[in-house]
Image 1 (cartoon, rainbow, N blue to C red):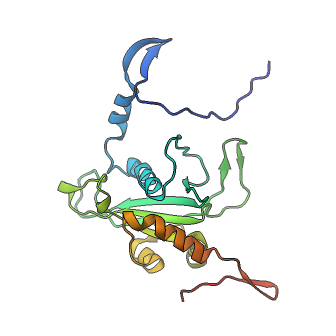
Image 2: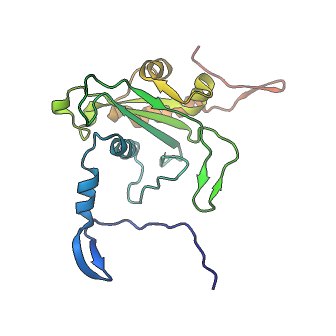
Image 3: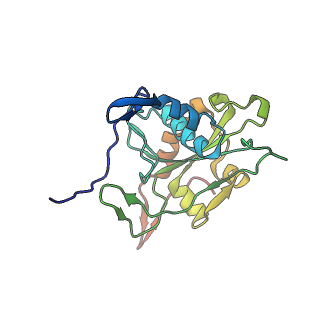
Length: 218
C-alpha cells in the first residue's frame, strides 16, 4: 500500500472540542487552550497574527476558513488583491526602560507551496500590497489591541516598495512614513488599499526596449 502524505487541510474548530482518549473526554475544551496561549495580544508573535485578523476584517476578507501560516501571502481580498501584513508596536509585554524603536521586516522571500512542497526559484516580495500595522498607543496602563483606534496603518504597493527599497530587509518608521505618506485609520484602510493598488499597478508604458512604470511621486 502506498503511504501518501498530502498536505493537511484543517477544518474550522468551534472551541468546544475537548482533550480525549479515543473518544472519551479526559480534559478541558480547546477554547481553554486558545485562552491560555493567545490572550496576550501585545506579545510579538500573537500581535502579528492578530494584526492579520484585524486587517482582514477591515478589508472584508472572509474569515470563515482557517488561517494558513505557510501561504505565500497573508490575505486575499474579495477583489483578488493579495496583501502582506507586517506589525510593530511601541509597547511590549515585558518590562521596558523606554518605548521600542519601530521597524518592519520587508525581505524578499521564496514562496513555498504546501500542496506540492515546492519552493519558488526566485526570491521576491509576494503580495501586491503591504499593510504595515502599527499598534501606536504608548501608554502601558491603557494599551488595548482590541481598540482599533489605537492602531495606525501604512499602505505601500509592492511595486513602489521594490522601486524604492529594492533589496533592503527592513524599514524604519521614519522611512516608512516618507514612503507611504500619512498613516491611515482602520475605517479608511479598505479604500486606501484599493486606491493605491490601482494607482501603482497600471500597465507599464513601453519605451523602446525598456519598460517604464508611471509613478506620480518624485
